[in-house]
Length: 92
Image (cartoon, rainbow, N blue to C red; front, side, top):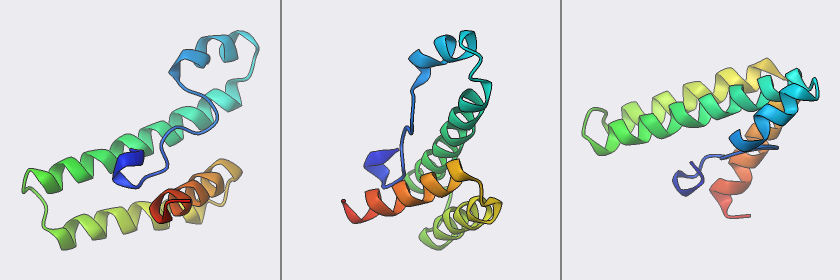
C-alpha cells in the first residue's frame, strides 16, 4: 500500500490482533481492520488500473471517492489514515 502512495498499516499489524483481542482492545482491532480493508481496496484499484480494467481517470475517481467518504466520517482513526496518506504521498 505504501509503495502505491497509500497509508499502509497504522497502529498495529495482523500479528498483534490476537493479543489485542485477549486484552479486550476490540475497538483498536476494529479500527485496524477498517483501515486495513481500505488499504486493500485502494491497492486493488491500482491493480485494476495496471490490468487495464480502469482508465487513469476512472482510477482517480475511485481513489478520490474513497478519500472523500472516509474523510466525511471524521473519526480519529480515519483522520490519522488521511494524514498518513498525505504524508506518504508527499514522501514525508
